[in-house]
Image 1 (tube, helix red, strand yellow):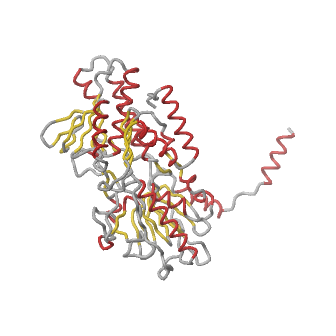
Image 2: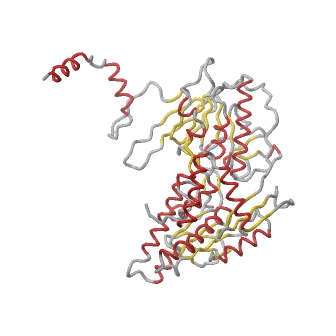
Image 3: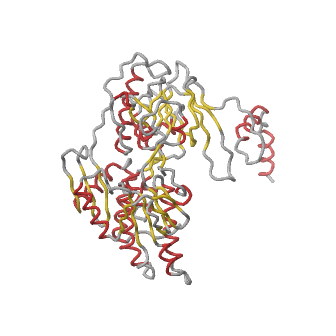
Length: 492
């Protein structure tokens, strides 16, 4: 029993935890309890103001193209960086449509924020909080936040505040429904990874259900009718990917229902309206050749199994994807800042919110005020990325000049204002075909290409724009395996 006597010695030598340590532990863990009890009051309900001898704190709201490019360019030696977002990754949106049909895996288009700015997970004063922003108090330089929960049976939301020295609102925009009844309830948007996962699961479920004995011909055609509303780049690219999936994979693996599945693209005006007329005609030709039915019409109502157009005709569907542009989110609408045309947060030439101190806004949630004389820029990834890069350099300059802390940058020269130069647009239409329009505007002259060469340029350009070498490797391998073995049709 030698080992037993040694165990007794060790247990008696161990000192009991002090009451202070025990109380602190219980206080820290109390708000994680699922019991319906009042939370224990904590001494601090968030991050307080920084002291003069500490690094100033930059708070970034959002983890999209603008916010992530900003965090990547910020100097962690000058600032503590705090990011507040309901997702802990950036989505490479140009390739999101490819994940819906198994061309790419979902992780290939998701880049963790900790890889974009390593100090978020390593520096003592830098943090990432999985939360939504609920308000901004510009007088006290505070952001009000609420943690993200996952379902009704999980933790209750935890509210807290973060003091900032510089605040960057890059919370993005939400899908625009134009107030049409039933869109939010029955349509699926294509802006996040979970949207792509939902589309994929719904598509594969309908394919398998349609093969069940006893399903009527009419119901089988409805289940396998995929309707895309919105003829912009996202809607066209998803329609092209879906038609490729049908031709190359469904026809081989679902031979019993291959003649029932089809795709309809509904657009109120012209598809790809920002592209050259010649490229638009080419896209229409290729989509039609791929089996996509193009319909010009305005959706008036969306029901559980069909949608109603303005002419009264009804279109049955099994899968409805909504891609009609974006509009301001409820959070942006709730802010009392001056708004630009379209309801975005109004900014000046240096991307500042001019009515308050130390607040900037970039990305889809912001737009130039009419007083600047500049047009509101389109909600594009390249606009957001360029704004994030510019603002990171500007904040680094302010920090080096001693203006990093709150209310200390009033007399600092900000330098040259932000200027945007459009680099062109690209879109794939399926069947190894794509469009490349390098004009700076629709009226300007420039290079425009279509066909296989454009498709190669499209893939090469986006492969180089993927944020990390890890994800570039993932994307390249996914493309190769899809080409050799076909798309993965597992419903997981």
